[in-house]
Length: 76
Image 1 (cartoon, rainbow, N blue to C red):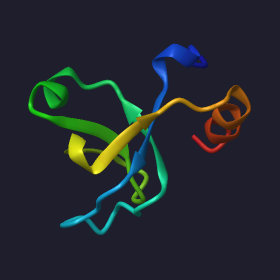
Image 2 (image 1 turned 180 degrees about the vertical axis):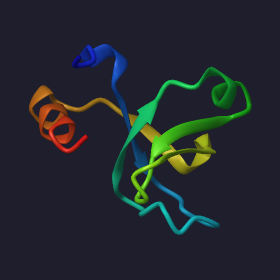
Image 3 (image 1 turned 90 degrees about the horizontal axis):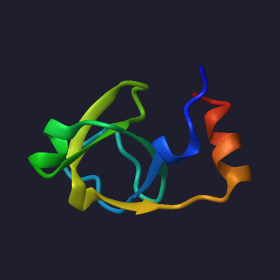
């Protein structure tokens, strides 16, 4: 089942200190995680292909055009 576009969020990595699984200037899919959010983290699918919580300060949430979202979803 495909997720509704409002549920899929993306973030641009602006910092990757202490993390070998994040690349600066790369867009990552953000997954819902209320516990992580309450603690100041975002759960993202990183370069390992797994989802992990990272500090919110490492990212800027971005709104992508539909065409870009479709292209990224094809790889998920």
